[in-house]
Length: 306
Length: 238
Image 1 (cartoon, rainbow over the protein chains, first blue to last red):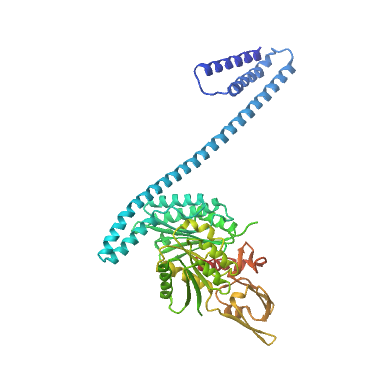
Image 2 (image 1 turned 45 degrees about the horizontal axis):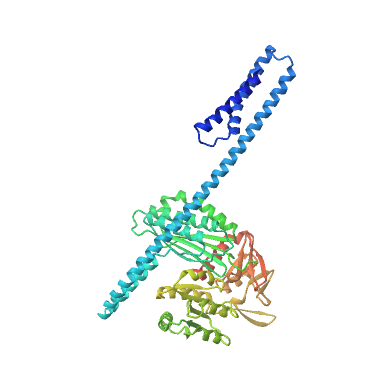
């Protein structure tokens, strides 16, 4: 009797769902999915009730009940497995879309940057004529020192609007991001880079190293409340198959005492040290006047691969 | 000691400026040849060589990289410094083992910083390691020595072409070598210029283009030796 009731209930549920789907909910609810969700509590209630009622002997064959219970439990387990798989797929899909979204956002930002630099180029081009006129004026007045400093200024302007650090597109984007983050915090991050895009090292390894180093320096510089000039200099330079990464920032020697407990460094630097060690590199840090310097040498990262 | 420098730029003013900056750095250290035509430099290289090259990257009919390739044809070590307007060219310059890359305009600070490194790299005083063995006196330039190996009382001196031996205490050996040498093990002292890789327990040395040799690093020297290697190699790159 009871399972007939359940079957009827199930059919009713399916009917309701399909009706809802047709008329109200435009959401693509999977019929099977909903059925599975509904059948679990129903069957649980049924099993419980049969277990209780079986004492009063309603069913003439007790073995029959065990077979039914076993069948329903297996059915329920299958339902849970199905739910598990669907949820798993759903999360996979979600993750995929989130990463896709992130990549898309990064690309959009990159295009925005291109647009910005393009418009900057236009304005430089536009200024060029004016500058020539000014220079011509200065030269006809024999104001050579004035002309020199004027030229130096405009060269500096061109160099400042530079977004190029390396041919490695991802790393270039990453460095640009860091430079602009620093800038928005009032810190000048000057990057001097000379490296190939064809390194044996993965870009994400470089990104982890650089990201941690830059973030640490940025944090340290922002703690310096009584310094006016906040700057970090970063050097990424390759020579003879080796790559040197060196970052330095102004440092308050007072912190050697006040932040003594921080001498053992945080997770970030530990990660950097571990990665450097794993890739056959060497890590070192020291104080130089009032600067804090971290230097990393990665050996044999460039060369003819077969 | 004079450094022979080839300067190649098709714009005479810039070439002249570089020459003056070199003279300002040290009026007697450099012996300079200026080429306005890169093809003439390539031609000249067939019979001559230079200790250092300063090349423009952009020429009307060919790129500075082609000159560099011609240079590298028979000279792998002489530093090449490129002068350029565009950083975007840099990728190709790694193939020819570029020493440095200077963005125009060439200023005193940029060029002099590069020259400081070149001088460290070229190891100008060309000091020598002298020793006697079997009553014969030997003198080897330090730049030719890959590593020293101590075996009981003997010291083996490994160079790309040969192995020499002599008798010397470790202390005496360490006091004789220049600062390019780092002790990595009780019985090994290596020349950092020949280091290819540093692993946890070994350091790989370049013997020549194809061969390498692994030297053990001992726990006792590891941390200090690694830092010394970093600081020394950093001098050439920074």
